[in-house]
Image (cartoon, rainbow, N blue to C red):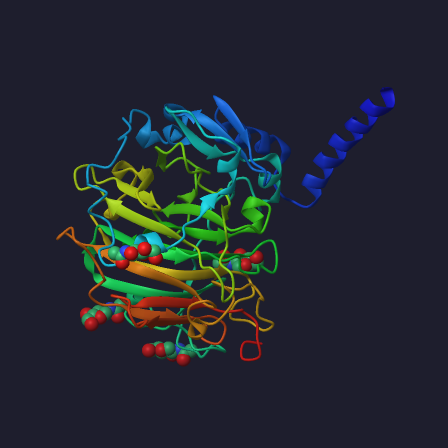
Length: 416
Ligand SMILES: *[C@@H]1O[C@H](CO)[C@@H](O)[C@H](O)[C@H]1NC(C)=O
Ligand SMILES: *[C@@H]1O[C@H](CO)[C@@H](O)[C@H](O)[C@H]1NC(C)=O
Ligand SMILES: *[C@@H]1O[C@H](CO)[C@@H](O)[C@H](O)[C@H]1NC(C)=O
Ligand SMILES: *[C@@H]1O[C@H](CO)[C@@H](O)[C@H](O)[C@H]1NC(C)=O
């Protein structure tokens, strides 16, 4: 017994020391953050993939720690009709959607919301407790020097050449209108992520504000080992008010998103994954502003309301978005460099390999103040490192609107 206690004691000491030595999150900060993030659960669901889902009383969720939300009264459902934000032309029953792994192990009772528990080791992997759960700041270098690969042109910067540090994207972009909604069906894959501090996404962005200080609401799927502790494909949401400088986070890892769903957990793993030349799976993501409250709703699948970003925490976006992007992004210190990262985007195949191989988005739509869901009036494609990850908007034979293909392997013969 004494020996056992001594061993535990030793382990704790070593843990404290190792934290200090590698300069990562400090023990005390970690414990405080855990207490702040994880709210008391009414019911706990242990998922077979290792996740723990806490069913938290709806008014005890993390959003209520936000100063602007202390007295917020939850809007339980959107005031728009979800049937109206449905895709018009396609046969939905012939498509296969995904589920979340934890749903096999139980469900959360009414009056609660399902929240993926943050574990101690999740925080210990972060570079700092302050930075935990957030996209790294987006630093934009405007430049007219030639950098190894052809750089993208951003509508934000008036066609000035630009480089976004540590990020590489391949996207479909629409600008110049006032958008109050955007959606897409996003094909699901599990791309390779080379090292722990890198991630890869397939997502929608709704943005407003200047290019170096924009607001953004985002959702899609992601593989992010540093954040989640594994390389599974997970459903995520993210927001920021200042280009990720000091505000915002993924999922519910800070206060700012109000969840209303007890069925879907942000940050939880999704499956099945599409197979090469085989069955394709997708998630439907919709982000729509409620014109009565100016809250932005996140809709998953065929009309499952996840929750909303409240108007009171937003600035310009409170009124409308001015830009929508669909596509993938790789975060890595080794983009625009040789050796280039081997972290893949989409399925890991280039856009030109089309359906069955490349990752795609279809039923792409926007909502403007006509409140009709429609294909965006003007789109452009953008591939920041065209030899590593590509973008292709392609009219597949019978479809009523183009399908957007994107992705690539990262490092390859043409992207050394
Ligand atoms: C939709 O697809 C299903 C299964 O493939 C088929 O049975 C049905 O007739 C189709 N409906 C329409 C309206 O095309
Ligand atoms: C970039 O362009 C600006 C004017 O357009 C010029 O003043 C500057 O010298 C250029 N920089 C380089 C490094 O070529
Ligand atoms: C962007 O373009 C507009 C008109 O095309 C011009 O008036 C404006 O000065 C440009 N801004 C910058 C930063 O170059
Ligand atoms: C890019 O990544 C490197 C390595 O992780 C990091 O030191 C640097 O701060 C990052 N730069 C930005 C602007 O995020």
